[in-house]
Image (cartoon, rainbow, N blue to C red; front, top):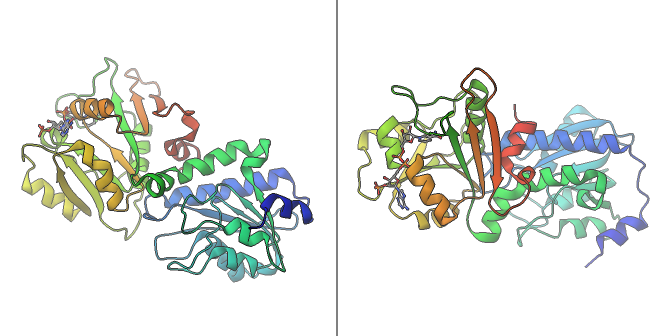
Length: 352
Ligand SMILES: NC(=O)c1ccc[n+]([C@@H]2O[C@H](COP(=O)([O-])OP(=O)(O)OC[C@H]3O[C@@H](n4cnc5c(N)ncnc54)[C@H](OP(=O)(O)O)[C@@H]3O)[C@@H](O)[C@H]2O)c1
């Protein structure tokens, strides 16, 4: 197997301004973040193409499973704009795939393009698809292959690419999705909304909550919340993905109290409702459904069980400011990593 870094050193690297790489990667990540929640079981991936002086020529993101990958989307945009021959650098949030799946390998498509340098945001954790970096760097017309994580000044961007990939990486390496808990607390530390209301947070927090619903592939809730609020769990406040497959909606309900009319209404709203009695089985169930990222929106009883069982990866707490100020948000990662590695942070940094 070719050693990527030695291969990269052997080739002449075009002297691109660091700021051009940084700005291009931000565009690629922004484009991919818009597609989070639409691509499962595939990851959300973005690609930006630059010319020899670092000017942005085209950006692409993988729209959905079975559709072209980000690199192909970006190359096609460049072709349509008539600038394909000017492309010299590709910035990809994920290592280009190296296998024939539903589409041909992206490493091959980049090899056959005018691209000379490929910057990679994160290595592919999927054993079936990895090896794209090595393939790009070998053969008669090798490309320069660079990794963001190798350059100290690009570490924050590498971390964003890692966060973007985290939900998919969890599913392919552990067979379960990334689990995000969203919990809103009022000034007294209570989760229960005032009588007659279903929520109490600020408009900005509400918007983030709906961005999160759109970005996630499934929702998990408890029967207590269903019976108290009859929530719709639909994406509002931001536009949802068009034509996406039904989102799984798992309700923890051990006593069979789930109202049939509520289930029918949710199915009509585009959910696939599943009653579940065993919290411990939820992650595997979601993994089998191809869910990369699931959002847990439940009341205090189920959240207590989730915390006790350690069935979460990041925990978003919205502390509501009751006197007109901005709500305070905190994100905790269960494995003790920096909150910056949470995919929720991407919605705050790059979301619409
Ligand atoms: N502020 C917020 O962020 C927020 C979010 C959602 C809801 N809420 C509020 O929370 C209130 C409802 O809270 P809640 O505590 O009654 O409801 P909940 O937490 O949504 O659901 C509780 C139910 O979950 C099931 N459950 C709990 N632990 C389980 C386990 N280990 N395994 C399997 N099932 C388990 C139990 O079902 P069984 O009874 O069948 O055993 C339990 O009754 C509502 O007022 C709602 O507005 C607030």
